[in-house]
Image 1 (cartoon, rainbow, N blue to C red):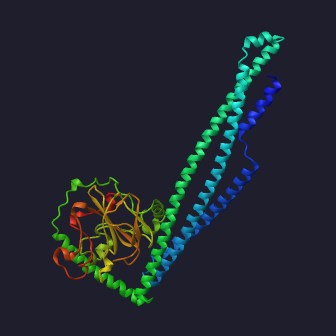
Image 2: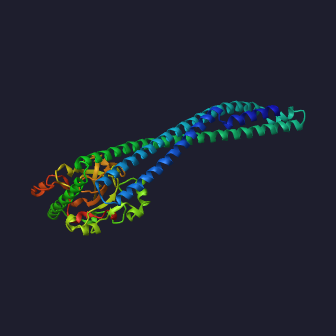
Length: 445
């Protein structure tokens, strides 16, 4: 084998293993990358719009509660959701483009590997043929020691080049595996984005339904809206009295030793991490990092309005959330019950509610929902969508009433079932508990 032949083979082998992209592949990849960048720019612009809508919503929330401010909030929420839907659609488009880009890269690497394997097989045969002649025989058959040693050196160089080529092939295979793992991750992200899109569209439906219902109730008259609020306040006072009477007579015992340790953090916040991050950026609006508008216990509002809470304080925490905000399960468990107290005329209490039993001594309650996405007896996991926030029941503004109860001291029933009540919320199915069963949600979040 001549030195020239070895050099030519080495060059061919090196070029084949470089896996240089074809011009068509480079063009296609560049085109896809341009589209991905354009999508990113659109996403940045839309997210700026979403932030601007949020500022307007916060400003409205600080004003007096009027029909016009409530309708304006609903309309702003719809615009914000429309922008969020466009963001998600752009992210879906980008994910699809990334999959196309990776598919092209995978195809190129597979073609390169096939060519490399063929080249290596050919050169291995040549090495085998060369190795069949022992070094001693090569030395004896050579015209001089200089030529013999030159042949031996050429053989060593060729074997070294072949080893390097095999290493390059292994590297190409590893890169191919990485690309395939990346495409799997991207496809999973795509499925999650499509689920987000479906949820966001349901959120729009929830805000539209709330707006239509409010306009129908008030006939677009401010005086009618203020009358509705007064009716809710009066009905809530009656309801709280009935509920307190019932709670004081429930023969249920709560064993504190069966409850999770206070401060254990066994519960998650009932909203997405994106929502909670947004809350942390709005500390100046709420005075806290969690969008909490009223805490548990004898809060300033409950103390100033004893007629509403009958002197027992607030039995949950209220978290500000626009109508249509997805509400998630704070922990895995089983849906103990769902209901809608608004179905009973004049009963303004929980509105649409969901209670989940978690199997660790705790139940969680989510109320004032605009819609419910789970059913009694259904198993749910932490972070699973269970409904959308709203202002059903006794709520003069959109928020989530998030309660935590000791499972032992909780029942789901009607006031009529317990002692034949016939007024107010007598026939509304709802969670009731002994006074000792009410727990501070912040103790477990």
